[in-house]
Image (tube, rainbow, N blue to C red; front, side):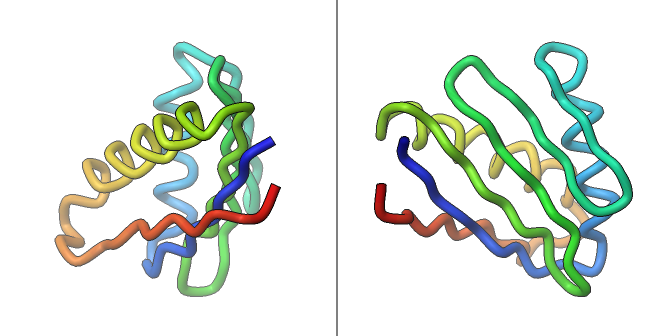
Length: 97
């Protein structure tokens, strides 16, 4: 498995986690509670966790190409939902397989 993580600095982590899970939940399996969420795509899975001043993301896929695609999908939607935070950055960091 190929895995990457990102810590997205924001005061609205819970809101964005819920928004992402609800949005993708119309097409794929997504679940969440007050602190964590999970979105299962055909290409891989993203886990989300609310931290005091950040949204913690973890993406996992079978191939490097699928991981990049998964990262792009999550980052682009998060940035769209966080349009009031123009400096919001999603910097994925690969983890060793």
